[in-house]
Image 1: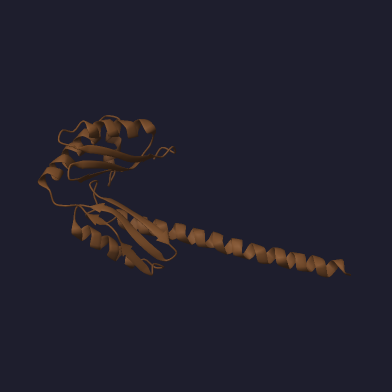
Image 2 (image 1 turned 180 degrees about the vertical axis):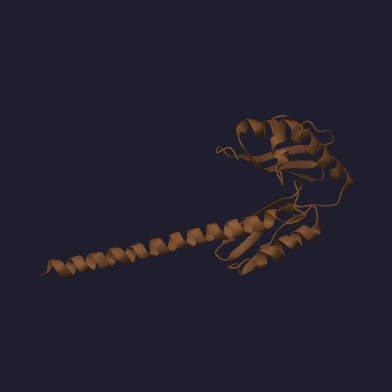
Length: 180
């Protein structure tokens, strides 16, 4: 008889310790779902291009928008579409609008040609928004995005460094070993 109540208490305590773990797993899947929604809304913005870089961070129901854009309207559009996502209660817009510069525009075009005309990288140019983002600010270039492997990352860096008029190149490309 005494072992029955102890077993029952043990089972109840075991169940109660499982409930918070299950709830946190649900929270994580909810954040994953929210992240997919935010990402989808950002990459489908009409003026989002290879010369913009949008990123975000989620903390509960608050979303912080990060990155750099060439058009001020893209910054506000990003905030507006994320605000409308169900489950988002606050949007902190830290997107930087890059300064207007004819020289930077010329470097952007030259970088695009140098990177995406390379035979090993031209496969990436066929996507709606190519995954190698070229951010140019005052002659300094940052490559951001995801490529399939380390070789593609290195080729993009070499090509970016070959463009005349560039002060520096920062290669922030990440690799996706699954072949994306």
